[in-house]
Amino acid sequence: MPIQSAIVFKTKLHYYVLVSLSVFTVTGLPLVAEEETGTSAVPYLEGTPKLVKPKRPTPTPKPVISSIGRIPVKPKPVVSSIGKVSVKPKPVVSSIGKVSVPDTDALSAGKTTTSIWPNGKAYLFNGSQYVRYDPKADKADPGYPAPIAGNWPGFPPAFQEGIDAEVVWNHQTVYFFKGDQYLRYDIAADRVDPGYPLPIAAHWPGLWMDHIDAGVVWPNGKAYFFSGSQYVRYDIATDKADPGYPADIKGGWPGFPASFAAGIDDVVVWNNGKAYFFKGNQYIRYDIAADKTDPGYPQPIAANWRGLGQ
Image (cartoon, rainbow, N blue to C red; front, side):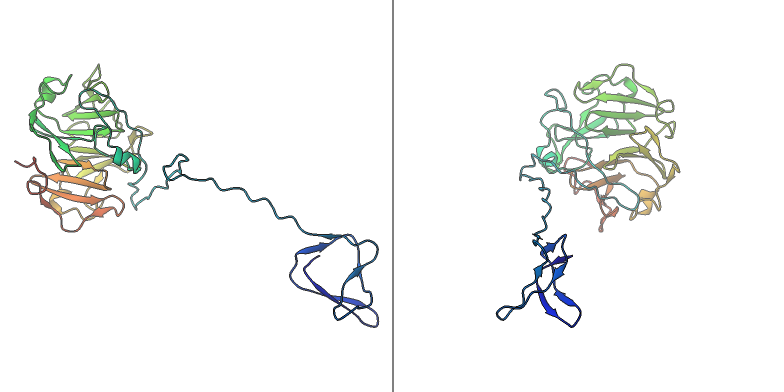
């Protein structure tokens, strides 16, 4: 047995060893006593003693993580009660059209999927016009609103007159919905892909067949589509709506006022962990991690989104 120190004393028939916490191990031989010398008792062994110090296991070195992240650590997603949090995909960057320099602050900070294009801009539509909005400057870029016609290559006439919803899909594709049809827009090529529009019903399992009011990709691998007072949670990996949907907005989105629970006009996700829902001339700010509407909302669009709401 392992021993650290021992005091040996002799009785009429036996020798005893008092043992405390161990560092050394005596192996292979029985303990016997010799006469004490000096003032301390010393243990002896029959034959040649073998005192073996146990080997400590070699610790597995921990990886060194540099301050600039050359050895990346996979972040653990924060998941809310209805599962709306996850990780972001890699952006695709082009030098043409609506794609320019990526939002490096957001990317380096490990932010999640947003409605912001790889050029750091967001595009908001109203009727036959659209606005290019700069989230960093928190205002619309000069020269907007601008007409859809002539600025979105490949848009058919019906989509140039206005769209129902648009969804930025993993910073590579944008889907535009109008009536019972949709377009797929290639961000890098800056144009509609060939062969569109196509019918929603044939390509989006579990979605409504027409008139989608709004849609957004949430940072959990899901997309959320809204139509009237209902919403659908759509699984991007399996390319279909999750079971149990459509469901009512009321009760599914904590803090939504009654007017927003009855339906929304648009929604965007910013790189600050917030989603913004628009209805009429008002908007609400939704905290993704807390999974609820922030206090103090709704607020007027015109007073808080420069260049919108005119």
